[in-house]
Each structure stands twice: as structure tokens, then as C-alpha cells.
Length: 320
Ligand code: NAD
Ligand code: UDP
Image (cartoon, rainbow, N blue to C red; front, top):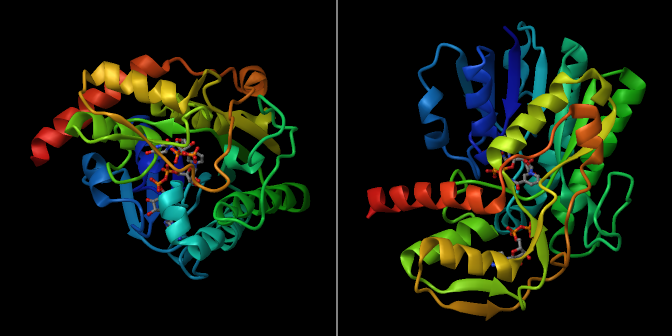
């Protein structure tokens, strides 16, 4: 049995990871300041003897002191808002959690001799001029715009990881995560899948930003969590940055039409202004994940959307 520390435990990916680790019989300490995450996400494991939850802000220097006497085997640093709506509302906090927070968690890993996984993002590639994106593409990020607080903070988080790997030999792994979804996303999270599915199921207009020709590649959460755990497990991935995402690309308009069709919704598609610096294309090259981790996603968008729609439908019925 391992002792695993997960930051961002009450968030979308964190809560799925915690459940998976507990199912595998590990002892898990989840840390979260409940800024974008909610305790409800952890309801299933709240009474598990294997789970311990601490409400704390990992940007604060003493936030990890409670672990001083405990051995720690693995650290997953997932804490950070991920939706543009939330990271732009707390831009300075987003910078701190990915820089100061990453530093505190790397120090924890160093002092405990623990393995460390950092959840970076496809946003590290910015509005890419190379398509699709492999890990050696250095990106096209605007430092002076509404997405910079997230994109640049993640890039600096990666630099901290590099330094702790090279200077302190911490077994560091960096996941560049591409758009991931499931019903676990909050209805009000503002990301495209949660917006479209909620809008379609409640008969509201489906809000396509721009002309909807911009593309994304969507990974179902179960595939993502399996990828993160493989990344943590494989020693050859130490000191590596690896894309974790689904390489099938869709335009946002195609997603809107697919959601409308699968929900059999009468909602209208409406076109709203494209947010500033919204990347035009995004698709991961996952050769490295295939080769080093023996990982690739198994769940296509249509199948994942059906699962997501069923869950949202049930959730909306419960609350109505
Ligand atoms: P989320 O917002 O659902 O979860 C993030 C969690 O971190 C929340 O529970 C929040 O309360 C917590 N948190 C934020 N600041 C904190 C702080 N200072 N101290 C302690 N806890 C804090 O987001 P998510 O989708 O689960 O994303 C998890 C991680 O994966 C993030 O680092 C994100 O950048 C990365 N990521 C996610 C995606 C995606 O598509 N979901 C894509 C790329 C990268
Ligand atoms: N988007 C959209 N309508 C929405 C929400 C998002 O058209 O209601 C678009 C957004 O402009 C972007 C894509 O969908 O081009 C993915 O947005 P999301 O916020 O989910 O993630 P990110 O931009 O970080 O990839």
C-alpha cells in the first residue's frame, strides 16, 4: 500500500484520481482549498479509512506541515483552476498555485523521496503554429493577455519540475493534459462540454464562440486518469514531459451539432464572440505516451458524450 498525496483532490480530475487510487487499495491524502472544487465530488470516499482530506491552500508555506512525520510515496499536484472562466477570475491565485504551490509540493517530494507528477496543460503550446502538437514543440504563448496567467504559470511550473529533476534528482513527471471531460465537470464550469450538454438538456441556446471552426481534441476522464497513473508508475517517464490527450480532433461546431443530436434537443445554436487569444487548433501527438507508457485513449467522443449526457440528465432531474 502506498501513501499518495493528491492536491486539487476535490476538483474534477483530482476526485476521479482519488477514487481510483482508493479502489486500488492505496492510502490517500487529498488537499484542496475548495475554490473551484466541491466536497460533494468526494462523497463516495469521505468515510473510507483509506482517505484523509485536508482543506488547505497549497500556496501557503505551512500548508503541508501536517505531513512532517508521515512517509509519502507519490505526489500528484493537480491543484489549479483549469476552466478559463475560473482561472481568469482568480488570475493571481492561478499563478501562485502553479509556481509557489508547485515549489512547495516539489520540496515535499524532495524531502520525502517521493515521486512527483505535475498536471501541466496543452495550453503550454498556446495558439499553436505547429499542428498537431508534440512535446518538443515550444509553443506560441502570449504573455500579455487573459490566458497568460494560466499558460505561463504552467510553463514556469514545468521549469520548477525540470530544476528539481536535474538538481535534486526528484523523480518528476509532467503531463501535458489536453481537454478532458465527463459528467464530473461542474454545470457552471464554463468549459465547452459542460456548457453544451447543460444547454442542450435544459433547452437553452447552445453558445458557440466565434464561427465554431476552432478545434479541440477531447479525452474522456477514465482514459486521462489511467494515463496519469501510468505516467506515475513508469520509471522511464522520469524527467519527461508527456502529452495525455485524445488525438481525434473536432471543430467546436461539430461538437455542438453532435451534442444536439445525441440529446435530441430543440436548442438553437447561437454564435457569440470568440474570446481573446482562443487557440485555433489543438491536437496532441501521443507517440511518446504510446511508446513510454503503453497508453492510448480507448473512449471516443460519441461514447464519452453519451455517458456524460446520461449522468447530467440524471443530475438535472435530481435538482429540478
Ligand atoms: P478543477 O478546477 O475541477 O480542479 C482543481 C482543484 O484545485 C479544485 O478542487 C480547486 O479547489 C483546487 N485548488 C485550486 N487552487 C488551490 C490551492 N491554492 N490550494 C489547494 N487547492 C486548490 O480542475 P480540473 O479540471 O480537475 O484540473 C485539474 C488539473 O489538471 C489542473 O492543474 C489543470 O490545470 C490540469 N488540466 C486539466 C485539464 C482538463 O481538461 N480538465 C486540461 C489541462 C490541464
Ligand atoms: N467554447 C464555446 N462555447 C462555450 C464554451 C467554450 O464555443 O460555451 C469554445 C471555446 O471558445 C474554445 C473551445 O470551446 O474554443 C474549448 O473551450 P474550453 O473553455 O472548454 O477549453 P479551452 O479553451 O481551455 O480549450
